[in-house]
Image (cartoon, rainbow, N blue to C red; front, side):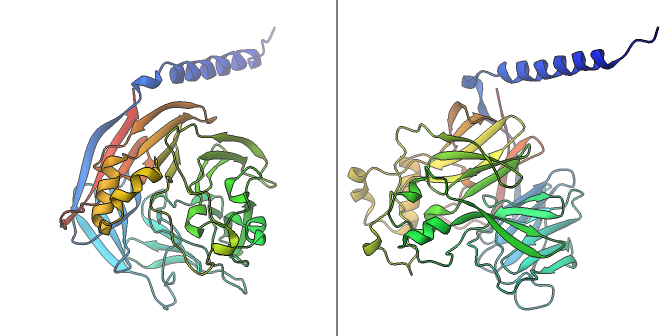
Length: 384
């Protein structure tokens, strides 16, 4: 008599699932730490944002915000080349990337997204494919050309942060009723679709006016879930990837010393000005690994302590506040349950870091005391 292999398959799947769960549970939260594995130092005079890392090909992608140059480096510590694709040329993405560029899976090209369109270049800077959005009115999203603004491929579409000023001024209720945090870029139809309104429990629906920069989302995609932190708000929202983007869970962060700006009265807010509160707590970055949800943050400065920083120059302000109120990282499981909280070493940037191939890659913190003629990236393992 022929025996079916189906029950055996089910048993094997259950064993595998249990072993994976036990493997995760075997890591005690107190044992989770940063382990610096290596570092890459590339000769370069100027300030660079970290965009992407491609471990198999040994390449790193940076952006010089001052010159608008894209910069390629190698893990052997070499500056490969730099070039500009800004401007009004047919193969130009426009004047500023909407977020960090990303390497293709084989490392032979990279993609830049902008308010103007989606552009993929080879490593020589030649346009491979892409172009302008085919829409009558181009979006006006706020961007930052660094790794805390990562986009995600989903088939031929790109999921990205798609937030900006919007149609209504920020000192009106309509702004918050219509604000949408994310966007799809369809690279075949070359269309843009905004979605994801503010959560009904969000502090940004408290009837106050908020600085535009305070709302800028942090977003990650993993296992068909969208993980979203709404600007400086200490809460994680999880949604399904497909419309209508059902809310799976909302987790408020229990950070005892996190102090953040609650907004100001509509009549006092100037809708033309972007003026972030530098004393406020900030959620700096959000990434999801195979095991963890990682959120880096600056806790903020209590009002009673703010006076001693008032007369400092900008560089001294950044240096002193970072040392006095060290940025930290929340380490959660994939359901948003807190496992541990880690202090971020001062040599690591709390904003410019990403997850690739089992490692965290941190851009070195900006040296505020003297100009350096190199850029440095740390390869870090997170584990017990």
